[in-house]
Image (cartoon, rainbow, N blue to C red):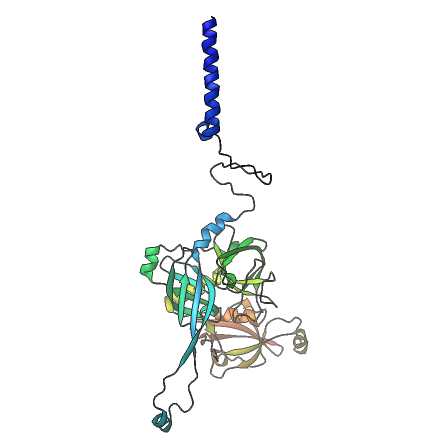
Length: 391
């Protein structure tokens, strides 16, 4: 018995010695974490449980889904020296020879864009690429590619670019998912993605503050989403997405007195952007209806002078000779009340209603002349392109 007890004691002693040596020199053999020394501050760290848990209120999945589809756009515009007035004079040429037009250094601009199709179509603002001689697109994965202008629409401030389709196929461009405007409601959370001030791709969060904003003097055709998500210079042309990562607007403008965000940003609704984009891709331009009138808003004072009970409709201030409105019998001083059965609230609504008509269609119009109401029909014409004077 004594011999067995001695063997047991020796075994325990050897085991404890081995355990002490292993725990001191090779703690990982026992599954213990290796200590890196005492922490300067007592820290409380969460355990690694494998799959990340999405915290309440996090929009990481929406951002993760949309970020690869938002690109940075860099443009270059050469500064051209004006031609000398005597450059074509034969005597001037005799003494000074042929003098080619000189080109100075380049102006560079930047903005953002959204990949809308896997074949390389990119939607952005017109003012981002206006006058650009070269357009370069930087993808989220670091690739930089040349792009060409497919077409633009200055009156809605939209443009469509395209990179080489073969290159787009090779890179498997991630096209963004388009949202539905009829599902967007004031108070919805939205994220603005772009390249503000050229610092790099950035995501800001806010809510839809208002819908249908117009009369801002930004574009000819206005129907903006207003948001308090921070939008700054360089965000133009970027994506406004919903909490599911779907595109609901193209970031376009900010209201600011300092050049920075004041919590009032505007985005073009995806419904408008998609319509313009599809026309540009199909036809290279956007076709809108036109009747050839100048209109004026009816103020309360004008309404009283016309004997109207309310300041609704659009006052016809001028009619272009030979225009569809002229042929249809519209005269200055008439008040336009309805287009194709839809009421005209003000000149902006009238412009939108007429622009939405198809050129060549005959559309009924309701007007007031003095105190009498009358109806007429007008064959819609094609709206002429916006003339832009450049310095």
